[in-house]
Amino acid sequence: MVEQKIFNRFQQMIETTMVIGDLFAEPIASAAESMSKSLLSGGSIYACGEQSGTIISALLCDYLSNGFEIERPGFPALHLNPLCLGNIRGDRYAMLLKTHGRNTDTLFLASCGHSDPALLAGLSMAIEKDMSVILFTIDNDDPLIAKLRYHDTHVDLNNLTGQLTTLAQVEIIQCICFLIDEKIFGGS
Image (cartoon, rainbow, N blue to C red; front, side, top):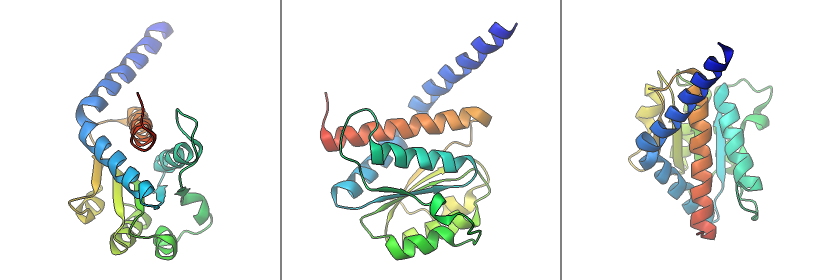
């Protein structure tokens, strides 16, 4: 009984991985291209998220700063969430981007739905600074999505549910980081 539940769970994960490759190839490639362009032009990657999006944005920064699958110098990537500890203001990310953001930078946002005001303000500031934007959304994020420009990247995970959404986000982040390493350092 328990063994069957374990098998079924892993089967779901495998099916989710296959769906990710089919549905998200274009935005994954676009996100990797945008971040690579920023890094190659001397820019930085800023990342933030709310709820489980905090973990996803931290993972992205860790992979970029410390390397993913190859040993390489670290890329300038800054996770904004820890810099805002104790700051509950709705413009906490925007304040950091106003000070540090440049038009060669990319902002990565991981929303868990309902268009958090801090993410909205951060996105608005990134647009004001003419930064590239990569947005992960789940549900009820129409206000965030509406702010995106034609050259920004949107990864819409609305059709996935629960823990499978987090699995998809992790796999997408890993693929993006793999593609960035390939673009900048070449590969096989």
